[in-house]
Amino acid sequence: MDAVATGFYRWQGRGPAAGTSGPRCGLTCGSSVSRPALTHTGPVGSAKQLICPTCGNVIADAQHRRWQARVVVTSVDGERVRPTSIGLLMALARQRGEQDRLDWLQVHAEELVLDLICPRGHTVLTAVPDLVRTMRTTPGRWVTPPGPLGPNRPPGGPA
Image (tube, rainbow, N blue to C red; front, side):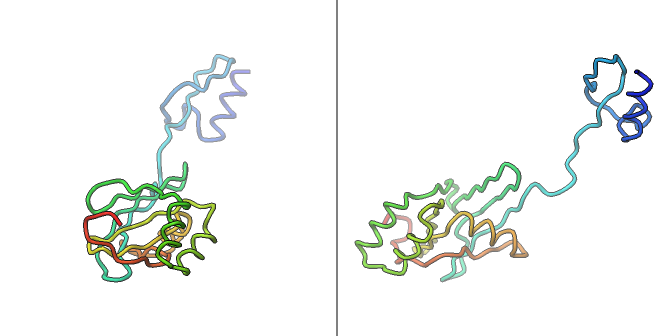
């Protein structure tokens, strides 16, 4: 049984002849076959800067990881941008009479939505799945987040 198990793992390129290192394979046959060390061969994800569609300033930095899907968006101030409540955004859009923004929010009601604010006061809403798709398909370091523009806000302050 030892010879068969050792030969099988050598055939796969994981036996002692392959020069691998790492933990034992855990077989009960008592062979000293070891598993290859796991190494990462490709990029973990992408990191891009989000650009304001109105003025061209950097709004935030975004990092995307494909496996264990995760998007981390950090504002220019260094604060992590968290998704905003759709109900709150819809109430604000109704209050301000912004029908195009309200329609967009109704279409994206089941998705995570980020309300990004430019240092100059411009705002843009973007759904996380749309942002990830744009980050993956746009070459270069800069990405303009997809989504409707909002009303200007006073720079550095809440709405």
